[in-house]
Image 1 (cartoon, helix red, strand yellow):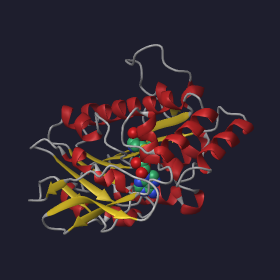
Image 2 (cartoon, protein in one colour; image 1 turned 45 degrees about the vertical axis):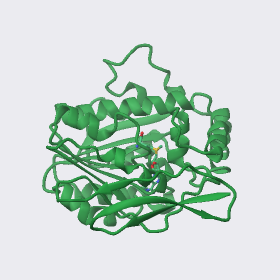
Image 3 (tube, helix red, strand yellow; image 1 turned 90 degrees about the vertical axis):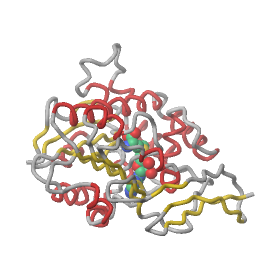
Image 4 (spheres, protein in one colour; image 1 turned 30 degrees about the vertical axis):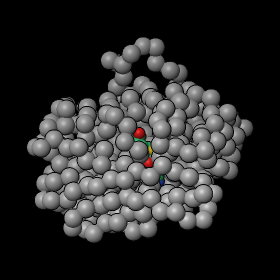
Amino acid sequence: MFAAATTNYDGASHLTLQPTVSNSCTTMTPQPMGVSVSSQDSQQVAGGRAERRIDTSVAHPARRYDYWLGGKDNFAADRASGDAVAAAFPTVRTAVLENRKFLHRAVTHLARDFGIRQFLDIGTGIPTSPNTHQIAQGYAPDARIVYVDNDPIVLAHARALLSSTPEGATAYLDADLREPDKIIDHPELRRTIDLSQPVGLMLVSILHFIADSDDPYGTVARLVRAMPSGSYLTITHVTGDYFSTEESTALLNANNNRAAVDLHLRSHGQVARFFQDLELVEPGIAPVAEWRAEQAQEPRPPKEDVSGWAAVARIP
Ligand SMILES: C[S@@+](CC[C@H](N)C(=O)[O-])C[C@H]1O[C@@H](n2cnc3c(N)ncnc32)[C@H](O)[C@@H]1O
């Protein structure tokens, strides 16, 4: 039994996700939804391609992450891959929880302390409360957030990302980080975010899914160039810096043998390259659980248990 999701986007009135039946082996729970598009400041979903299929036969990063976070939007292949990764990296659940806590701290600093009122959150993931707009609008109700992800299951759940305050705005783009110009030039992004005003560019736990052959450094540089002075770049990235060669290999094999998207570990120096010519805010590139975590609950996990680098930098 097979079920796929079909998105119908007419660009003017609404988006719906409907179950369709075809001839493969796995099932999914359809998530019917309707998102109204009414005015420039309304909640918007854009870029939904027709006939998008949610392939449940292979693990996808968004659904596997949801599994580790204890969510319900995952399938057998995601859970099998998640368990295989956990066998190679037993603290993976600690790592994803710490990543979410970092996201919370970073958005808080950006909105509350650095005065950022616009966010471009690429690699959004399946909605997990609090999402970026909920954190930012908690400090600045007029904050405007554009979410971007390339996974059809995130598109299917986009409505939860669009619950903006009346003063602010949210939009969702079904787009790929590897095509930064399509994101920057997207009319919905331009309607939601004013690129002459500072933006919080969030690349949280996504760049390790971009292979060197897809030019992650050029992609980040292109996005950074599109942001005005006074914007901030935020990154977390999985690293093998605390693993032996054997442990790194085991983790990469566990991921890459079972998932639709390969994992790419990067060292401190390789992560630092993303911030070239930018002004890192204190404490610079830090273990994820330690970045500005002075107020966080003790004890914090050892950095090996999280195995990720985090940083926020000002774009001059
Ligand atoms: C691990 S989740 C991170 C979610 C969220 N940013 C967080 O840190 O909690 C990674 C997300 O990146 C998305 N992603 C991976 N490669 C992508 C690409 N090339 N373009 C857009 N999104 C991508 C996945 O679909 C997934 O939702």
